[in-house]
Image (cartoon, rainbow, N blue to C red):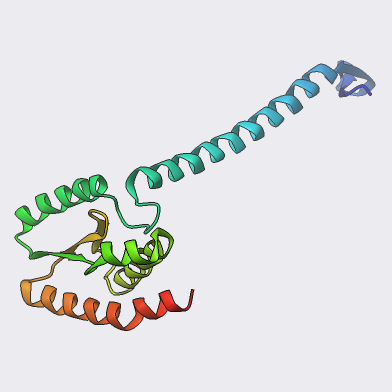
Length: 180
């Protein structure tokens, strides 16, 4: 198949009367083929960029989050906490930290196995997540140790949040383990 561009120009005499027509045909088959290939390459590049961006997001998540609990890992927590500390110093707003762990976790893990221990950690972290505000940071600090950074929380509020979280864990975390 040949692609062509047709141009038509009137031929006029001295009195501007049309005396004829000049028609030209330009073969643009090769240009059309190259343009289609270029469009296809651009679409492929766009798909490739989207895939790279998706993989980069996944890599960032893997680099900053604990894969089991989806909490921040210690390194990412310290990076974000450092930025928050700088802001708190400037604004003099309250900041509190809660350190928590799962009592007797090692004995539980040894007795029931690591698969059940993992379920306990998942249930525990989910319960903590559900009780936190959007700006709070939750990190898996160690094996069964978690750190929660509460922005704009004076000690009284932090104590109230900690007690509420403890009650939620007691009420919900155990039940979610028994149901799985």
